[in-house]
Length: 253
Image (cartoon, rainbow, N blue to C red; front, side, top):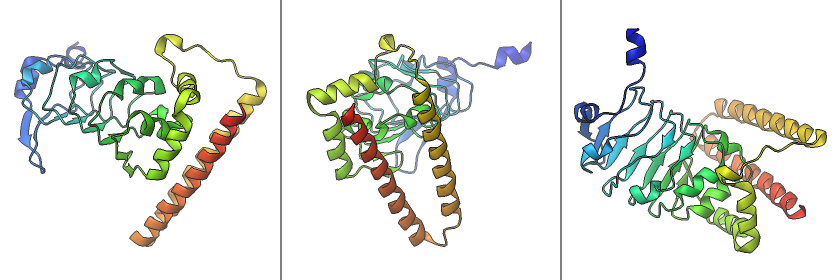
């Protein structure tokens, strides 16, 4: 019975006031609320907008919602939660957000990321270990809707990527592609794949897994930093080639 009582902890005013508050290495004032099994965001107005950084990692939060207006906040850590939804007013509530870490969550629909497009000052974004990262044109999509982002998933955004993103999503045809790839929640309908499409999907997934295992082995066997840098360049070229193939297939449809 006691375990049931403590298994979930609400983000109360008292929890916020008693949380670790400190100055990080880059002189930002932060509050640490990680690892407390918090299920939802609430009562952050109790911070009085006095923090540059909030760490809510390692909790059980399912939605990025219910933020008060926090003009001072520039960094939000949400690593390792259960986030699958981003509120429409998220960007409006955090107008000066520069760094957002959403790795290891449950985002699986590009449409949810549309609600980040109002984050005009966002510079660094991490979405690693979300199902959404396997979506078609995932990286180009984010680069298009968030032109301010300079580093995505710990990789610097290159000019060539910006040009490809514009080629994909610019103009009327691009808008139609966005509607197809990033439907609103209410527009999502189950899609029945043909046997041939299912087979292609299975083969593609197998190829992705094999490629990931091969790369992990190559990184493990790298002898020095120079070899790792060469591998990173090689992997980027391979990914660009695969994305070009996807783009050509998209044009044919």
